[in-house]
Length: 150
Image 1 (cartoon, rainbow, N blue to C red):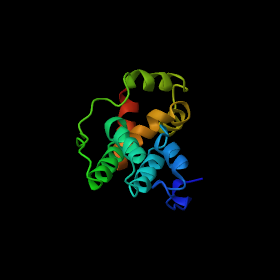
Image 2 (cartoon, helix red, strand yellow; image 1 turned 90 degrees about the vertical axis):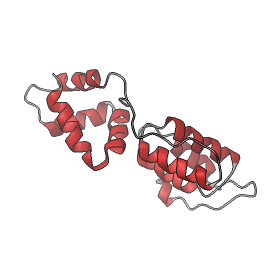
Image 3 (cartoon, one colour; image 1 turned 180 degrees about the horizontal axis):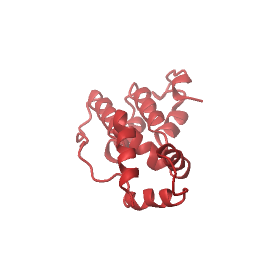
């Protein structure tokens, strides 16, 4: 079930009725779009448990878009929180080694598309984080990485 499909009504304790599903979506490490949708929905409920989830996402999510959305929601709640930085080191330590392993697992004359699909199958966490972080430039970035990994 997509987060967008979940209708949300507030319970008597100030949390959305679908809080458990939204909390789970906010923790999906291999689905930045689900985390972003959860942030948008949770951001309508200024409750301590929601604030804790949004704070965790601002501080530790790998995808800047998710961090920024959580930050905006917390600011709207009047919370004092440090803005996320767009300048980050490599999202995954040893990215070059990860990509090299995937490249070596493919036939010598494989295509970029085959490499991209294998990365998605083997390391959806890496694929998803960089897809979210790079946005429209993802394919250009990944193709560049693929051609430079030796």
